Every structure is written in C-alpha cells, then in structure tokens.
Length: 127
Image (cartoon, rainbow, N blue to C red; front, top):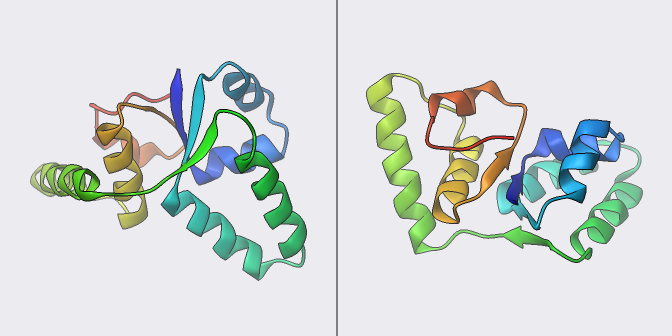
C-alpha cells in the first residue's frame, strides 16, 4: 500500500497511536506531501522543542520507503479539477488539503488522514 501521510496522522505517529504505527509498518511507501512538511515546520517554530521536532522529522524522512512529495504540472491539473468539483458541489475545503488531495489523485495513493473534509472527494481512498 502506498500512502500519503497527513499532518494529523504524522502527529498521531509521533504520539505512538497504535493504529497509525501498525498501518505505516505495513505500508510499501509513505509519501509526505510538501504541504504537510510546511504545516509541521510551521508548528515547530511556535513550540519550545523546535530543534528536537525537526530532528525527529528528519529521521523519519530518512527511513527507507519514506519520501517527500512535491507538486509539478500534473499536480496543478489535478488541483484545478478537484477545485472545480468541490466548487460545483458547494463543499470547498482548505487550500492545503486541496494540494494534498491533488497529490493523492496524481500519484494514485491512499490518504492517511483524520480530516473529514476529504469525504467530499469520494475518489480519494482513505485509510
């Protein structure tokens, strides 16, 4: 299983949430969207453990099968399509989540997230 990891599930992983730990242990590949990296690092800057949190993130990203995921032209096309769908449905979602959704669609991934707004995009498989 190839997963895209959302910010809230990375936090769950760091807190040792059993269901997330087990899910990620059996994942073939784990992708961390650029938006998730940005959200995590923004949160780190507000806390008193910034260097420690950054170190934990760096060690996670260096694990075999884990890699950051960045946008390209295909991502922007997926983004535009999803944006249109959500607007027509009257169910817009936050911009950062739209970028994550676009990467998930583009790379045929399963999304590991607790955010309910992804439910407005039934084409995105979630775990």
